[in-house]
Image 1 (cartoon, rainbow, N blue to C red):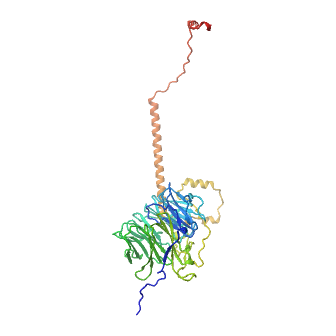
Image 2: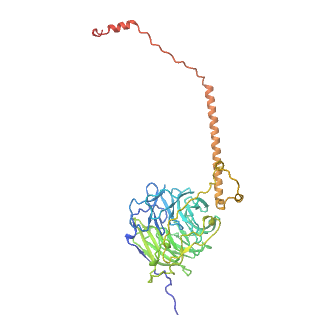
Image 3: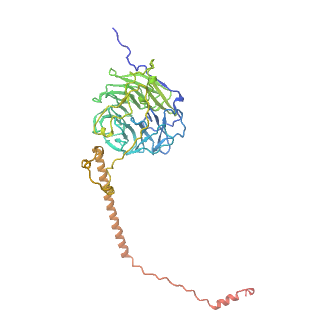
Length: 521
């Protein structure tokens, strides 16, 4: 009779190793904002970190080869008027990054290859919609140029960055939105909120498909979609103990497993690797990184190991699998931000004796190509993400320039349209014109159309009120002028008086002569 004592797993011996200080990034003034964000974003080309900046918000962008001590006057990306709260690299263009700030504006930036040579203040596009600070930016996993933003106004906006317009606006949260995550194909959205509920939303329909209380604690919680559809959450219990849970979308209120970890008060960020089904839990203020493996066998979430460091972490970023070194069997790479200004690089490795490519460790991973366009996704299409093989390693391509094409403003006045029509030269109709119409991509969604209609009606009301005020003031001025004319007499013409000098008497001359001295005669 035989039985298995130790669970068989190829990731059971994963270990973490911190690189030497000379291979890390030092002298970085990490942001001191109290916002629950990772403050760091990484891709195979660049490392971006939110930093302290006087007179607004900024973040620093470093190429991976620029290690060591960073000069204090290194160029920044600084166009925000308030502190930057969140940043995210575009998964389909390694030179494009989005940032959200307390100034209520989301900016999308184009970073040149090789990094910045001077401070960048002009973004590719400004996305203005939110009424309060924007604390969450998230790119779509499969659709090109689709960006999700969430603000403290409890609103979620989904943008087409290529045109700078809002595709969808969601108003289904009664309180502050803590986190958001797309599923594997980008057809569903998972959010956590201050009301302790997690919600699965169909963004194109604007409907909440299911919702449930995630964790009883009042502190911030996080939730992510796993590759096969399960939901993994982190949060706090009623006794302020940190815990994680695994759930199914059909029964969000009944977790498959819930495990309490410790009593620390830092928010835990779950970082997920879909290729290996490993979840890394990184708490703000912690000095450890715990990692777990999700499997179909009970207890479903298996603890593997803990990476321990002496310094607490203020933020953390995870490198996409494209940027890992397959020659050393590296399956994950983290960038830990310490309070001392050091960005520590931690490599997670599976020990293997062979130097050949390990196909079991590196299945086809997410590539930098989009599966859909923004208009195709908005029309209801779904597609699996594009994947690529890491055999032979990954080489970053040349920089792709993000171009923004503004569409016709739906709030343009009829006068401006008529003026544009008058300026255009007349041309004879062609057979193609008989089939011309408004393209489906230019038709705004119902929610946006209703918002535009409301704004237009409000603008017309304001103009009507302004006209009435002007008419009242004109009548008042006329009445005052008539009153003044009736009360005051007509002015009489005034002739200027001519003054003639008075004649001088002779005795005055005599008196003057007598008064003269003898020698003056």
